Image 1 (cartoon, rainbow, N blue to C red):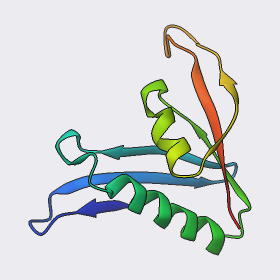
Image 2 (cartoon, rainbow, N blue to C red; image 1 turned 90 degrees about the vertical axis):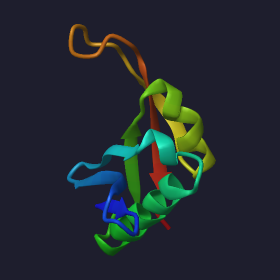
Image 3 (cartoon, rainbow, N blue to C red; image 1 turned 45 degrees about the vertical axis):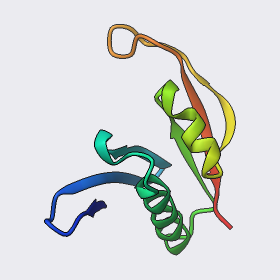
Amino acid sequence: VDAEDATDRVLGFYALLLAPAELDLLFVQDGTQGRGIGRLLVDHMKRRARAAGLDRVRVVSHPPAEGFYRAVGALPTGTARANPPAVAWDRPVLEFLIP
């Protein structure tokens, strides 16, 4: 799912996997961060997850994005350990509870 501006320029997007339930990625273009686009995408993801019958959605976050995910309601659940050379750093694991 993507978010576009009036000129059809993609400002952000996300991918929701249903089985297992995971927010595979969420991206907001650098120049548009801080304008609520990420929050809108997360809200949309939660509605889609609810409609799909999910009660929780896991996120393996890029470390600098952990604060964003916490701010939009994700709860920390653990750490995904580094797996060099594919991923060189530990990543926070969080979870959205879907009411």
